[in-house]
Image (tube, rainbow, N blue to C red; front, top):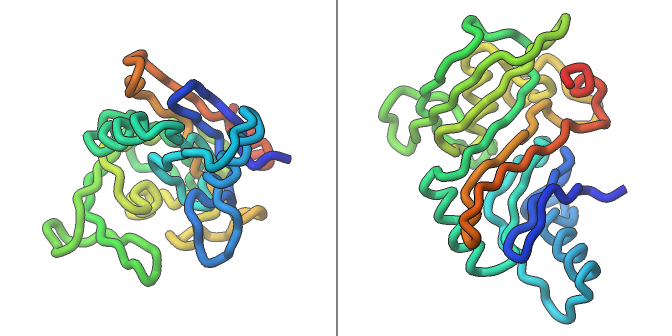
Length: 225
């Protein structure tokens, strides 16, 4: 079974639906990163000789599923990097959390500091040296007997931002042991899904909005469809 589904492709971009467990950059496991698999897909599809150019525009944590944008040309890569840098890309995530938030919707503002050794971010006091302000908006969009489904819109893009901020208000993401979940998910995923990206195409100028379907290998996502 392919590790990814192509959600959108043109001459400049290819947008993938990543499965939880796939890595978007090489790590110590030695597993083949998603960009290498996408390169192989492009090489075979278009019968390209030699190396295939593929620019990694942004990344998702290994246990997270959903939308990942890649650039097929250097022009698209530099322009997409600029869009992300300038917060011109709207990113929507869906998260299944263990406890409902106190308010059905709201804005979270924290200062986060990354601990590289632990690969974890901590909420710290405002203005702490080395910390960065993190902002997101959430709203409740679904409920089951035991869990709550949140829609999250990022205003900033910090390391583990959603995981740390939701945990900070007592809404730990299902399966996210690193941030306080009661138990792991059977497949090692966490119940955080990069649902949608929207932006102005860096070359054509058209409005692009791409939605990644929920993971099919976890029945709880199916409950919230």
